[in-house]
Image: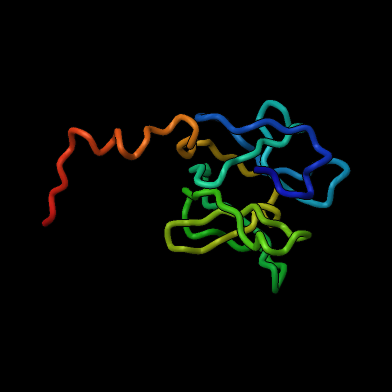
Length: 138
């Protein structure tokens, strides 16, 4: 998904091993991810996508506006505040549970897409997955 504020920016879905850069998009008031080889095209992540930054990502604190560092280098993309239509929804959740809005990331940081979420259209039905496997209760 790409945040509502990127609706007027060319975009494409993320793929495994994509090299991403946090960036400001021309003509918008927000930040997002672009491909390292095409900074003008937003790369949209689906909820559940896992990414790894080269270094602990830096972001602007919403209260103090000072630059902070996230708690780790690996994060899972998710969306927050979906009930509020005109606010940023794209966020990264780190292993310690902290959440950072993508729009707060400092531009120029590099990350790699590690894993995409399962596509529900291509997922194996639950009934088929259960056949031939045993449940072990410990």
